[in-house]
Image (cartoon, rainbow, N blue to C red; front, side):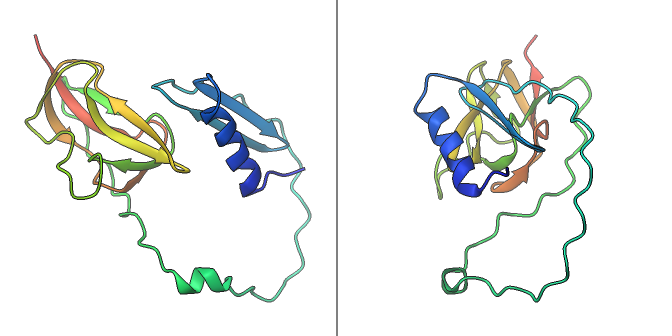
Length: 168
């Protein structure tokens, strides 16, 4: 059995409608883990050895569906190599895979810039995964010394987002 995109949407919708902060579903060799409200996902269990499927016969390319041709969408900004966090700084990392948004909405000023003062609990950005928005908050008070990901940049779990120089 495999998971379809519709199955994954059902998993995410179930999390949204529940009181859970995180969930993990494993079907065969597919693992779907989602979290919200600042919950962090635990490290995935080591996958069991799964034999490789036999190679599929060559097939003619399938044209994209007409809807995909009629409505082009802007691609998120490419992920650039993250900057090396400054010595002594506290690095806030991405809580999940997704798209990092620096502002609460298009055209709004970013939550933080280099030089911004933040308090513990202040929102520094949003990570979006499958239309589920998760606020990323500072867990220390201090001054932002670096912003590592541009607006609409793709991130993975643990990607450095912002470095903060903690207050003394």
